[in-house]
Length: 294
Image (cartoon, rainbow, N blue to C red; front, side, top):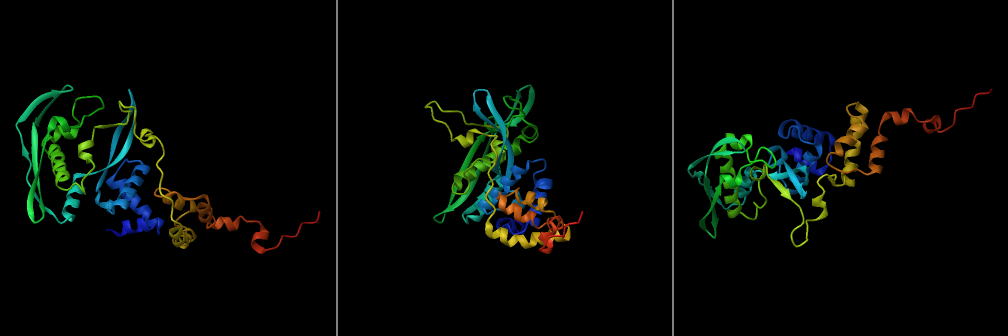
């Protein structure tokens, strides 16, 4: 695991957290919302993954919450490469076949002419009780492709440009799920791109938890640990004294990944030299300045 991730987990240095966040914002997830990148970091922290290796993707999903109702929401999803890594780390991975494709189909979808393989087949091998076992997935392009727009049939640019490559990823992900259900459970970003999540009530009258029915509610970040805060405080003081950071900049950076209490924020703000410079004379000298005679 990288030093950057270790520092983020300990929360000891806001400066290193800022650098990590800057890399994720500028290089790995350009254009993503800060709160979505925070979700990536928290996901990786919980799963003990290195965010610099981009094991997960930020996928804009349409969250359907009723008839004709819904909203776009960023969802964190694993990529097929994360499945490969987890399968390899399990110690039982014994190889995967090259994708096998069915006959090409030419069709017009949403006014767009597209040529795609009818199906794809991939086999993943796993050693079970000393025996090499095969787990095969057989997926159809028409059931997997992502659309360019919601409620439209035309494929998006990637599925139009790489019909074999995209279907192969989805098929391999399914095969990996069959072979390694303990490490590959959730659908991958490649499989869910262009799809939507339906959280409308079921026919029996039951619905998903209220938290899943409010796509616009704020993301709750973990509290900033008091022990980490105590360790970080002198480092922040040195940064502020040198002029490299302001108290508000440090608070902003920490709050990208954690929730700070009002008391913690005030302690950081008290490190600013202006707090001393602007204080009344009695606070600095310990006595009041004599009053001028009139």
